[in-house]
Length: 227
Image (cartoon, rainbow, N blue to C red; front, side):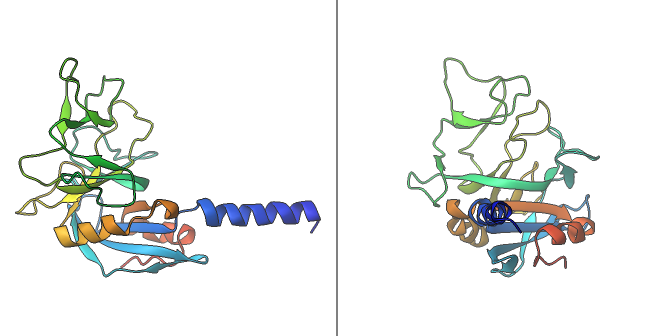
């Protein structure tokens, strides 16, 4: 191997180590229609992902899963599906003015919103409400039911394609653990463990898929379990 090729190879390996995700949240449902799933947290050691948590029961959308791209059923605005695919976890939020993780933090006061109007130029973004020019449709981030007391932002539809879905989070279960509108919910203890675990330097991501797809992803994410 030439010196040039050797340097390129080293750069690729270092880039993978420095910029690849070292924290992976794996959510696996029974099938695309399931409204619940199991979640395990993994950390990358060398070239293999190692489980660092026990499986946790999580709640999905009332209509199961919808793919982020490529095939049906596609995730769409208001369809009640949680997104299936691989997504960055970009921020956390909560009702406490003090940040709940090392990721960028949104303080959920009574003005924090997420815009779900498919015709708005700021569709699928979080920000603070301008009462003089409010969006036509938005979700209040400080909710009466407190399921957003703590949560994390799943960067689904980061390109903000109109109608493809918005405001996808990890958040608290409802008291009766009913299915969500498209987010992934869990009890408070595992949610806080998840949020406190996130390390921006390790570029956390979530892989959310039905069990039938898991073997395909085992090639990319060696070490993850499908059962």
